[in-house]
Length: 287
Image 1 (tube, rainbow, N blue to C red):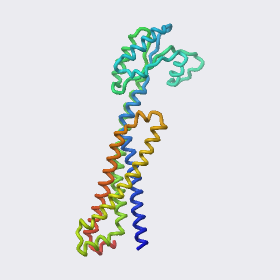
Image 2: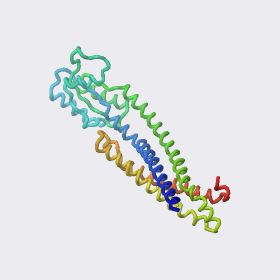
Image 3: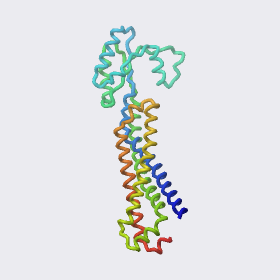
């Protein structure tokens, strides 16, 4: 009896552990999928638009250029900044594929700005660039068309891939949790059938197993939510840009969804498995 009890406890612990791992992976992929818009917006607002100024532009003219750019409704005002010629060389040299050493500094004083994500489009980038180009003191405006197109194409692919992976994880989670519960209840199959034979009602027989399934779901959820939350808090504190990406309302929604998912799947699997043993003949339980 002691051996049977320890075996049952081990199978329950295995059920909790397996369900926890599945919920962690599912939760992380759901968070990634639901935060894709936040990630997209961050990327959009990282696209620099470079404004090259004419030679000999006075400080007052430069300030007027900054003022007019900042006043445009599409521009992210806090990103507008002046870059002197010496620093402009460093900024532009990062995007140059060829060797620029030995040719001196071909760049001029610059102003850099970014577009608000809500207004981000190639059409609006061009519209703002055309406006900036008319401001006195501005020589030319640059932005990377290829980079914009690549971001748009890659984000669509990434969103689709993450959605497919999330759906696969949902399917795997259902299968793994079902099989785990099935393994946990396998040792009780004779007890389930015996209670039916002596006249116990199906609902009475299922009740303790449904309660057990609820406990497994709650323990699995608490463990998985704790681990996921720890990962998010660490990312929030130590990784640059994560404060702008993580949405705690979305995170709360994911936790609620995980809890409901774990509870529904575990309890449903338990009811199905108990019913399976109830409907079998005693001789079939030896198979």
